Length: 527
Image (cartoon, rainbow, N blue to C red):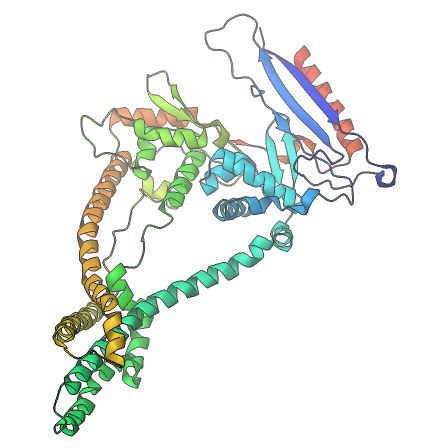
C-alpha cells in the first residue's frame, strides 16, 4: 500500500502586547531569535510516514522523515529586543565571513547545505550563522512543500549588518593594529642587532681607552675616533644607494633588510595558514557538485591518507571526519560497493552547478577545471630573505657574537670598578649574551625542525597525488563504483514555486496559507 503521511501542526501564541502596542503586524516580518518578551508565532512542522505492510525495497517517499521547521518569529513594531544584542557578534569572525561569502555566492537565497558545502562549515555552524544573520538583517524563512527550510536575505543585508555590529566596525582597526604591531616587532628585533653591535664595540673601545696611559690617550682617542666609524658604518642601509637597492628588493620580495633579520631568526610564519578551511571548502563543494553521493576514493585526494598499498587499499577510515562534519552516512549499492551519501548537501536553493557529474575518469581536467585535483601543502621556507640578505644577516650576527665574547673577557679582566657607559653595559651584558647566542641557536633548531616538517609534507602531498592519479585513470572496479555513485546522486533545486510558507508575509496571510498547506496534506493523505 502507498505510504500515508500524517501532519502534526503546533501553533503557540504568546500573550498579546499591551493595548498601546497592539496593531496590525508589519508587512515584512523579520526572522528574530526566540524571546519570551516578544509577541510571536511559532510554527512547527512534523511530517511522519506510516508504511502498511512490508516491502523489501519501499519506494522513496516524497516527504522527508521527521522534518521539524521553525518558520520564524514575528516581532511587533517598535518592540526592542532585550539588551539589543547583535546575534552575529556572537559568531567567530571566520564562520561569519565564510557564511556571508556563501550567501553572496548563491544570491541571498540559500539552504543550510548550500552554506555548509560552499564555506566548508559544519552543518550546525552553518545553521547557527544563518539564524544570526537573518535575525540581524531582516532576513526571512521559506518552507517548501517537502519541508525544506530556506533562508532569504535582502540585497543590502551586509550594509544593515555593518550598521548594527560594533564588532564589524572595529575589526578592521584591530587587524590593522595587529599588522602594525607585527611589523614593529620585526623591525625592533632587527634594529636591536644593530644597536647591540654598536653598543658592544663602543664599550670595547671605551675599556681599551680607559686602561691606557694618559700620555697615549690623545693618540688612542684619535684611534678611537677613527675606529668608532666601524659601528656607524653598520647603518649602511640608511644611505641613498641602499634605499635604491632596497626599493628594488622590496618590489621583488616585499621585505626590507631590517625585516630580513627577524626572518632569518624566526622565519615568516606558516605557509599553510588557512589550509583546513580550504580543505573543507574543497570537500564540501566537491560533494555538492556530485549530487551528494561520493566514494571514499574521490575524497582521498583532499584528506590525509596513507600511501597506496595492499594494507591501505580497503581502509576507508579517513572518511570519518567528513561524515561527522557534513552528517553523511554509508550506503551499499547493488554491487556491494560502499558509497557515502550526504542528504543535507543534496538540497539547494540555487541552480548554479546543479548538473550532476556523470563520470570522473580521464576527462578530469575538462570536467573539474575549477577544482584542484588534490590538496597540496606548501613546504616551509627557512626564510623569505634572498641569499645575499641571509649572508649579510649571518655576518652581522657573527660580528655581534664575536664582540660579545671579547667584551666578556675584558669585563672579567677589569680590576677597577667601571663607571658610566661601561657600568651600564656590564649590567646589560647578560641580555647581550642571550641575544647573541639565540641569534644562531634558534635558526639552527628551526633548520632541523623544518627538515622533518617538510619531509612529512612531501609524504602527504605524494600520497594525495597518488590518489588523484588513481582517480583520473581508474581501474574497472573503481570505474563501476564511480558510475554507481553517479547513478545514486540526487541534487534537488528548491524553486520559488515550491514554497508554501514564508515569514515575509502578514500573519493573516500566513494563517490562510497554513490552512491551504494543511488542506494539501489531507489531499495527499487521502490519495
